[in-house]
Image (cartoon, rainbow, N blue to C red; front, side):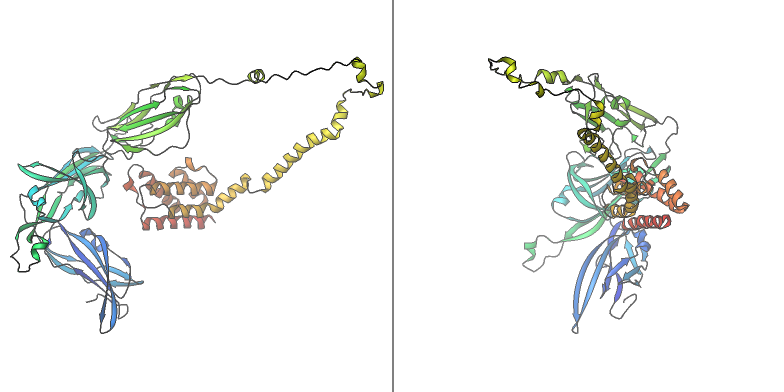
Length: 588
């Protein structure tokens, strides 16, 4: 029956797929059926304990007594954590701006069977770590090869509870498993990359499926890691022979039963980082790292380009590794010219690779100096700074062309032929009146038309440029005014187009910095969250707005360490845009 009605034609109801048993440790289908209406929004908060995923959507049309009805079916996958009776609570569904309530549903959850044909293992790369330290989680399940080859396994469902724990960020690792093929399987209701290989396990030839994730602890404490589990339908026998002659064409018909396997539970102890011994250039790397560099070519002239390649490795999680701060090394800035623009580092062969073009400034440059990398060494329990080996260079002076070089290379003047005149020089003089007095007078020169034009023209141009500078849109005053005027619109456009990829947090951070820079005529690149908070507070006198601004910036900055620290959802995007609008109104 419908849970509620806005008008007679509209109905909303919930339904559970009861065509098969609901097993503990597995997911089952939960559907919302909306008749003669379109869903605007679904509040899944009451279902959070069931870890909903989806939905998949189907549209159907039915005709009864000549009346056509449309049906929209939204199917979610819910997780049954334990056997027994459970109640799926009522939820709120908004259809065409009106609210409806579904009915609650009671279901029975049964325990799946166990079999030696399935096995499950889980391990952590360490059982004691530091807050922020990447820890590799490896989940493996095994199934007999004969079952896989005969296609007697179906509906695999893997559950890794720690991946839903809010005390951790989790990321994909850098490397895959050796001698394994990659595929995807549902893990916690989402498709994840897994690696498949064949080996002996407990004396039986098995297919091993492995999932690798990197967990990053957010807080200090001791955490119980719940067992990982796998559930699957396994064939337990053939169906009774059918008299239908087409059955043999579609292959063997099996009867299936649900089985599951669980790993052992684990425990992870997370310690705080020490406060002492931290270097000034430490930015959050924890674990063990290596760094190396190479340069090509190593024999150049002054000003010639050199390609510098820096590789950082040694860790299973390299995403947070940042560009080495070459522009903060005096040994680099005094010896080389370096462009401000830099390409993003790329992860290649278990290393993050950075490439930079540098140019030697003078012939005294003898090497590319050592480049540092600071991190907290988790094994040693202390902060460390390691360095690349210096790279020897041979720099040859570039010859500077002088004015003398230019004169010495002028083409020789053509020899002029002098024609003899019998009358001599006197033939060139008509009379003494032809001679003109050429004595130079400075006063006459300054008052002459030619000189007046010579100094009046630049002065006129200078005055015109000054007038244009103060009246044109290119003046600093006009530019600052245009920046203030367009600051809000530019920030809104940038945030709306930030996307949903791993770079979205950086785009939002840049938009927030640029907004404050444009609004208050500041350089964007040097603005921190605290700077922005102070400027917003100064102009709005609103501590709540300024604190909210700093908080959003802090979240986006933290995502450079781990992308899971900030995800630009629709709700988050709306909240940021509202914050900007409130600041804009308050400033005006």
